[in-house]
Length: 88
Image (cartoon, rainbow, N blue to C red; front, side, top):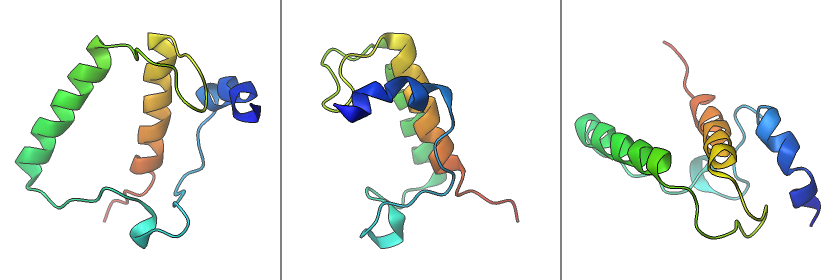
């Protein structure tokens, strides 16, 4: 219930850069090494899905999202992933 109250804050403010999931190897899950060209194809497909489809079920933590809020949350999520990237 508390997380539903802070849903708006999460949509408006950046998430903590470099956040790692406690107790996981490398701080995240779902790591799969694939060739760059395949990764790009997968990313493009995911972005097209995200752009074209709003969530049909309420989020178990935050409840129902509008399509715009869903896109914003995904951008915030991507910010966390990009916070790990460092230019050499």
